[in-house]
Each structure stands twice: as C-alpha cells, then as structure tokens.
Image (cartoon, rainbow, N blue to C red; front, side, top):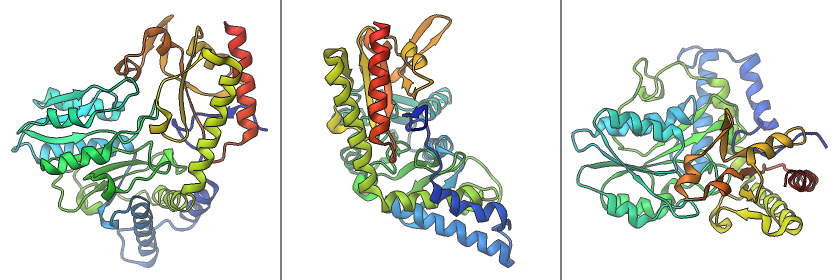
Length: 379
C-alpha cells in the first residue's frame, strides 16, 4: 500500500486514468484553434462540443446550456455578479447562506460594497438551511438566491429542491454551487429546480483549471469579460481544449459509474467511522447528520485532541484536513463550524476525512490504526 494514504478528496482529486488518456491527443497532436475554419481547428471545436454534451449528460441539461470556465470560482463569480448586474433595475437584494465557500461569500461581500444588500441565512446544528428561512427572507427587490448544494467542509446536503420550488414561485433566479456534489450524488438540474449550477473539474477527477456553469435557457445574465464570441460571448477567450476534453470525459465516467462510486465512497466512510467508534467510543463526535450528507465525507471531532496537531502528527501516513487553522499559536475556527454553533473545543478538534471512489478497505483499516494510535499518544 502506497503511503501516505490520501483522504482529502473534497480538497481535490487525482486525474482519472481514462480522463488523462482522453486528454493526451490534445496535448500532443490536436493543437488547432477551435475558432479556425480548417480541419485541425474544426476537430478541436468538435471535441469541445462533445465535452459540452458529456457535461450536460451528467446534470441532465441541454448542451447549449453549458458554459466552460477556468474553475468553480469563476463560475460562481459569473453566476452571482452576472445575475446581479443583469437584474439591477429590478432590485439589489441577494439571499445566500452563512456556510458558503469563499468563492460565493467574497463575491457577495464585493457586491455589498457596490450597494447590494445581502441576507446571510443561518443554519442548524448540522449545517442545514431551513427552506422556510429562505421564503421569509424574500423581498420585492430580491433578484438572486444562491445556496450551495453540499458543503465542502462537513458534507451536509442542502434542500435545494425545496428552495428551488420557492424561487420559482417567487420568480427569483436560483443558483447553486455544486462543486462538491457533482459526481458524488445526483445533480439533475430539473429535479433541483435551479437556473444556474457551478461545476469544478478537479473535484470529480478532471484536471485543475477547468470548470463549467450551467445557465438555464432564457436566463438573463451579464458577462464578466468582453472579447470574442467563444461560449456565445458569455465567456470569451480561446478555448482550453485539453482541459475541456478532460472535464467532459470525467463527467461521462462519473455518470457511467455513479452507483458504484457512491457505494464505494459511503462504504469506505462508514467503515472508517465504525472502526474509530469501536476503539475510541465516546471520544468520537460526529458533527453532521450522515443521512443527509455526501457519501464520502466525515466531519468528526476527537475529544481533547487538537485537529491541527493530529493532522500534522499523522501526515507522513495519512492526509486529512482540519476545520481550524493555527497561526502564531492561535487557533481560528472556520466560518462553517462557527455557523453550526459548535463549541470552541469541538470545532478546534474537528477534522474532515473524505474518501474517494477508489479508496480501499486496506487504506481505511490502516487509517483507523494510525488515527487511534495517534489519538492515544496525544491525549
């Protein structure tokens, strides 16, 4: 077994071998500009359109509703700013949640400085937004609701379908950042009732530096950049063919293997949790409702153990992330754990362990052994 065991798949994923193989010809052979009229350009244009259809297939949209970007951050910026600017004559109120990724909260913060009014909805102890709070927050000047599909830190899945119904009833555009959910759980845009949906390539075994934004037909949006006519002018610039092909293939593989991947990730996560509880008992505190959580994500605190110290202590054997940061001896708790009202000791002891589609039983059993031994030494 190769060490260290990687269990931070919510941070990023390795490139799937099938994805790498699909990309290779566009790195070595097919170099033409997709906008050119001759054959080597047309073949690359066809590759981009094939990828667009592959992405659309995973989320059950039309290919023409998929726009390629450089990453999820760009997709979120395009979605939120683009809708806000296109609808500024209707109102300047946006509803979001207190546990969004900085790629959403920082955009909202910027818009606030430009005269927009942002409502940040609170969450329950498991990090879940109450749809009734969304409904109660709606005003006559509300132009956008943006709530993530699943949280990156704790894995809680939001009631997007219910929120989507509320948005439609009130004729408000609805965006969800699905960076963590695409490829792990179903993300059917029609079932969810969203108008815009963000995809991050490197969260589903595609390369870093590629993302996509689903924009439902007839959704009025203003683009961030201006230039040529690529991506219907919404996202101009010469296409990143290599990475786009990679994202398309990753989406095709994710759709094909969805049931198998979901099962493997959940079995691995549950095996890990059960193993830890069997040896550590009440010292293990699970922060979320696992029945309403991403199948691969475990947010857990170990009593009387510093998460930062633990993660560092085991880093030569197992790689995990923490819910806090340590700078100059001071511990800072993440905004997500704060919003969930975790007490300081629990939050400071919280780690995120996220399994992958190929995580093995041997890796999980080794991780249990490493964690238990480390925790016993640190307490």
